[in-house]
Figure 1 (spheres, rainbow, N blue to C red):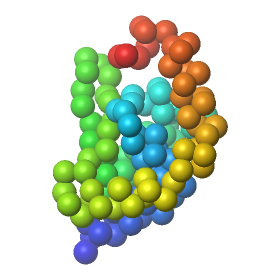
Figure 2: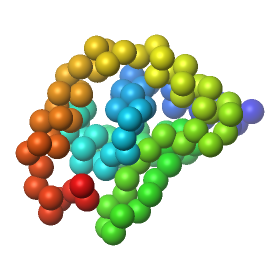
Figure 3: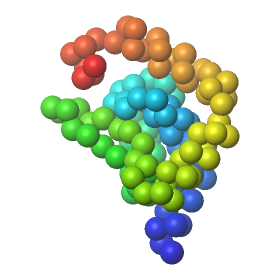
Figure 4: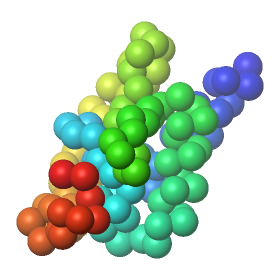
Length: 114
């Protein structure tokens, strides 16, 4: 029961839903998510922690960087993630997608693993 509570709690926040949508196509580092959401890093890290604790995102280390991606390893989580992604259109996070695109075009490669 606690596992379900964590999952639904994680899905109950607009910022976390936006993060899930941003991770739909690519893994991202925290700096990219910070730029896309136009939020400070501690807030973004908090939301990523909630999503990770719920088992909805996973991490991969690349040197000193941590890359986040969706964790759809379980059928139930895969279904939930698919449902969330289906309900959120790119238009719903248009500003965030544009900020992420701008950040990626202008980022200094010393500060991000891409």
